[in-house]
Amino acid sequence: MFTIYAAVLGLCVGLVSGAFLTLVNLLSQLLWEIVPVSFDLPIYYPIIFGLIGGVLVGLFQIYVGDYPKSMEDTMEEFKATKAVKYKKKLAKNFLGAVLVLSFGASLGPEAALACILGGLVTWVGDHLKFTFARREEFLKLGIGAMLATIFNAPLAGISEPLEEEYTSKTRRLKWKKLVLYALTTAFGLVGFSLVEQLVPKETIFKIRIPVVDWTPQAFLLAIPALLVGIAFGCLFLALETFSDKLAEKIQRPLLLAVLAGLLLGSLAMISPYFLFSGEHDLLPLSENYQQMTAGFLLFLAVGKIFLTNLSFAFGWRGGKIFPAIFAGAAIGFAFVNLFPYTPGLLTAIIVAASVTVILKQAIVTASLLLLLFPLQFFPAILLACFIAQKFSAFWTKAPPEKSV
Image 1 (cartoon, rainbow, N blue to C red):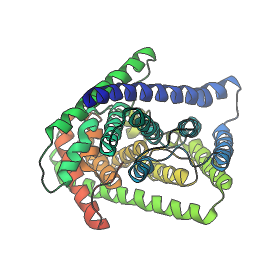
Image 2 (spheres, rainbow, N blue to C red; image 1 turned 180 degrees about the horizontal axis):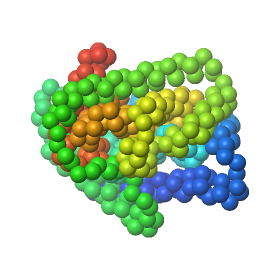
Image 3 (tube, helix red, strand yellow; image 1 turned 90 degrees about the horizontal axis):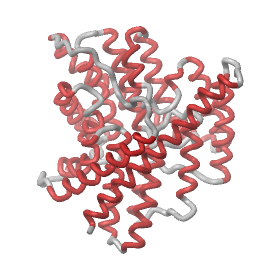
Image 4 (cartoon, rainbow, N blue to C red; image 1 turned 180 degrees about the vertical axis):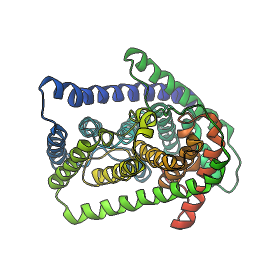
């Protein structure tokens, strides 16, 4: 019966994820494409929208609360209380996420979806009388399926049990758990595909790599690329800490949200790549990066992660995985602009190393990147993830496990 419940959960996750992303995409297109053209808005309209969004987000934070919760907060609440509150909470998480994402925040949808899933799992557990252990497993199954669907990464759904076995002392794989995760993920992808068939959309979360031309220089540059990726991941974490401390000093929700909105609008005036999570922008960036200077790509990468962390700390709450991958790709393209030898391989190594340092989960990161780059690069991606995870664990003196 639990297997049947898991399959149904996966299907529901796919349907909910697809519907949520479709709604956010439609609202974003309305606000950022249709409205400016229809009303012939001035060229500085991104600043206007950023300030309006800042005021709305600030008022939402004051009168409703800090929503949506992050994935980490959702898991901590679940472990502490054996539940995720869903009565009068699901609507707040949903509305908070739609508001932030529609106004172009450099954040992803995974945080809101994790909150919604947590409430759904708690509701199911209340009605089916699951034990806490089963409830926790049910939630992890749902989050795995959600990551697989929104990142177009089927292996992300089974990465959690693989990560647990890799970081455990026994290294004994529990095949029943792996099959259960795979089943949930498969039904999640089916549900997501059903929504896509109803509302077709452009290809997202893709990088276009030209025909792979292996060069010996690329192997010599693999170590420098790995170090660049690790350093960029450390910079992301440093900016995260800086943004949190800065927000603690100001402690005025409305002012914080408006400042974040002003920064968002100002950077969007420089480049539209600063808007949104980056899932839709990876493909055009990969097609046009050769027409950009390495300096601009470096500015884009650093500006993106600064905007993401500052926005989150200042009340524009959401997920950080999509922006981290986009920024890692930007820094990778800057690197290969200077050293154009098998650019896809070097970019993949930089993205893999940087995201692993941020998430502190090698297998999860590798699974998210599986279909983003050509399969020929996957062994290098996997190796870069493991090396970066070891470095991160050694540098922080902390265990490598961390919920995404």
